Image (cartoon, rainbow, N blue to C red; front, side):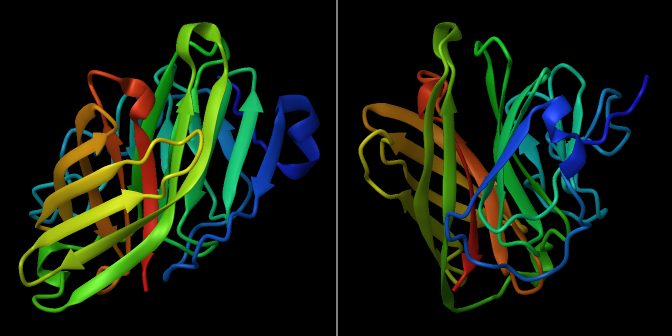
Amino acid sequence: MRNKLVQGSKLAVLGFAICLAMGCSSGGGHHFGGDVSKSDEPSKGTDNSSGSNPTGGTDKIAASGATAGTASAQTYVTPTGVTYTLPGVSGVMLVANANGTIDYGSNGANGYARYGTWYSTAHTTTEYFYTGENPTQGDQIPAAGTATYVGKAIRNNTPNGTPVSNGTASVSFNVDFAAKTINGATEERTGFNKVSMTGNLSGGGFNGNATSGAAKGTFTGHFYGADAAELAGMATFSGDATQNIAFGAVKQ
């Protein structure tokens, strides 16, 4: 099947891309650059959403995850089999075309992690994902000390065929490496219900419980880079998927 590369000169044909400079912090590391690329062929890479670790480590939590479709490294494959390779951006990038819309962020233009949403052209399905390169292994996580991580969360809702976007909100996390705990929350603002998260570290990742208003759910994610320089993940609510978010943040 013919591959289509979404580049600056071809966006008028495939859709449009809007990069919104949202003031994301720049993370460490390097990405494999270029414009967002799209392929109609399913990815042949590793599916990390099931809990495997591409580095062969012993992490208990996957370095990539998705509510549907698959994610690995800096790539997301939609439930319909369309592959997007996601370059680093300094804010949030929105790409819309005949296959749907992908809305994602990275922890700075040179960050390892990617996080975001994809929703169908008919606005009936929204999926969330997180992924990244150079996932931090369990034995690379600091054994002591605390750290604050600051970044962005993305939420897009497409209920009943009606396009609705809550956009982005600031998010911050406090991590206690000695106690192996993580606590975080998005900002409270009009149109974006606050999500609060409380959990524990496990290997190079983390998981726990999340709340958004009356909705109760869970969150999961992973650290990336040397000394756990970045994190990314998602919070999901089985009883109210309109509260779902994907997030990324950088150690301060």
